[in-house]
Length: 582
Image (cartoon, rainbow, N blue to C red; front, side, top):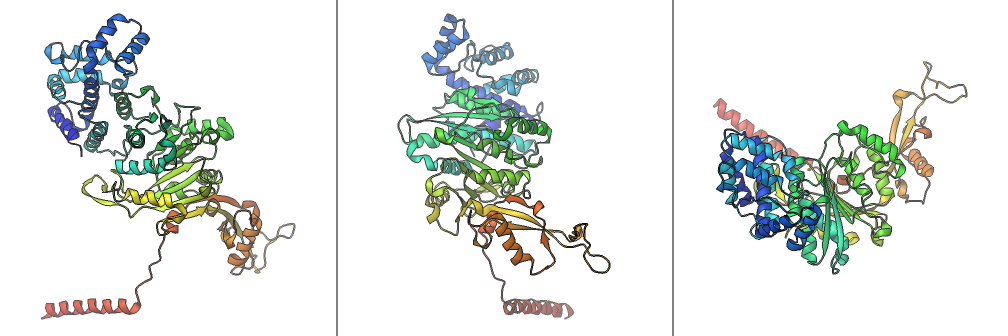
């Protein structure tokens, strides 16, 4: 991991005593951000101070500073890390003044309650040493690249959470997984992304520390140095939000595009749509505490609202983010949009027919929005070893992909890490593993069938039918109602899932009733000839049984081979018994 991160974290050793290990991050993170911004501002500090004396109006000052320095943010204080230590007695007041005099768009220190920490450090007699340590670190982008800075922040957060015995999954996604997601997200846009002076928008509703946004921008600029990617995001964790916003500030982006708050209850970009969207929402996190707001929005927004297709169980909100992103794609008539989202396996199949999750899958598939789903190796993430999947959505699919979904099994494309990082002991190697998955995606219908399957949207649909059997009287005859129809026996009631494609049916070739009746006559009636279908209870469902499509049958060992092995083991046991008896 980053040596810079290790060095910065080593500064925390000075906090031992007054601070517990799980509190180190409240000091280290804001100081790291402050020093990074300080290094960026230092070359033009005299220019800004001169302009400050000429302009009382903040708007005019901002415009003048940007014209002179090219940066949208500034600081009007007379203090910086260069001279803070010169006034030992006034250090606390001077540092507070420095933090207070950033331009209005630099609100990040409020989310750390930083001025409170400055006072606490002063009272503990630690402030001077901490400032001195950070003043010795050069964090200017010319010395520490944006990528290295991102690695350092992620390292610090992981160490902070380990000390607090918490998970880091809410904060950031492994960069190898992000790079694969970015490659897949931009794969269909390669031609357009090489045009001179192109402008694209990218949005992450669970921005974390901004790792996804940063790597996406790096990818685009590597392909086209003249391109411009406007980055947007929202984050509900105060510290992650502050890091993300400060990172974009340091790169010269419009930091007002990064919003603080809960995306699901307060969409900061209502009415906005984007060229690209990407996210790694938290897995298995319940949304009971804001279920009322989500349900109220779903009810009031009508059939075109972001949550109109359905709501998942309150125990897991992943699919709410999936719906949110589907509604954030730029409209097809405006050029269309693409989405890349990382989720665990439950959104593929959880929920029975006509449940919220099933209805969400139905809406996505019937609107032909799901382009590809890629299974990632296990043990890829820092806080969980569970199976994870990348979903790619596209509302302007290429002709050959329309009406189809590509499933890619990428579980075997991994490289063992030299050292475990939490639960993560595998990585997707940039040179060996990632190109294989991207090639499978690009080859589409011609891809290796052992790792890629292309299915029609209707192959994921099914009807759940209710099969009834008659209630029998004591004499063994069916009990009938007033009309002479047999009454159903609820204890014998059963359900069956009938695939849309049963019997070779394709979309539109056979009607629903014909397919269900054919299934019933073939699969049910021969075994229970008194059964019938209660057509009023038929429900429509969708699931994506990913692993079933890649299942490979391994025949059992021959009995003779098993017997021979057993005889060998029995012989060994008898020999051991003889030794004991002897």
